[in-house]
Image (cartoon, rainbow, N blue to C red; front, side, top):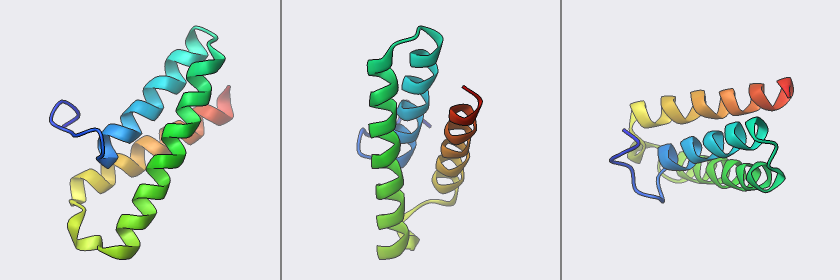
Length: 80
């Protein structure tokens, strides 16, 4: 799913946010953690916009994966 995603799609943005957060915490890199926050905000804004403007355009699988990944991001943010 990620390998086929364009950089302007929800799945790409959510996986990128989670990856930046994970590596940033693991290697103690504040820049990566800051980037993760930016990716997360962009993902949530995009998700909100798409859901409010045209929910039929979002595939069910993409929506579920994005919400799960953003949930993991939030939980991992609370743990560390």
